[in-house]
Image (cartoon, rainbow, N blue to C red):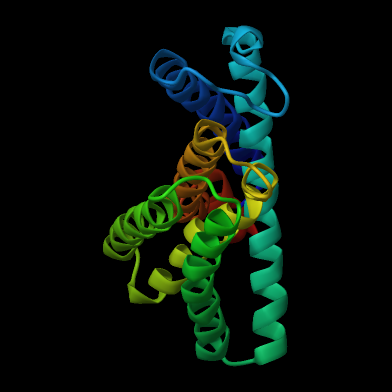
Length: 207
């Protein structure tokens, strides 16, 4: 993974976040009669605000993804055994499913959102993890689930904590999840591309 690939991943994630926010924000505005996001009411939420929020969410997702890679590197050096780190990630993911439901229930969002959101996020994470396994190998399943569910949960915490507006939670969580899934699915492709880059191959041959 070289600097050029990181630069591409960073800006493409931000653009994707902006695009998703425009789509999801427009849908929410057209269907919800009471939409507020970090203090902005319906009248203050326009195309520019959606793009700005999307760019910020994309950058935030990139920071979370980089933080996870750093954490994974440190954890592997501490645990020494990969299965121990995977076991911890698996346990944390399962715990986060119930934790997300409890937080939403405690905030009294409504009678169904506190269990629909965790299940929807879990199913979506499973689908992406399955696709990741097909493109790489079985060892990618648990880390992908951890990234897509737990890391998305943590990144969306500002919208989840103390928030009772379902639209605001969805507006932040949907692009976060898609950006995290995009980065996860692009990572192995960029690494593979870097390994097969003619410039890198020539450089290695010259050493």
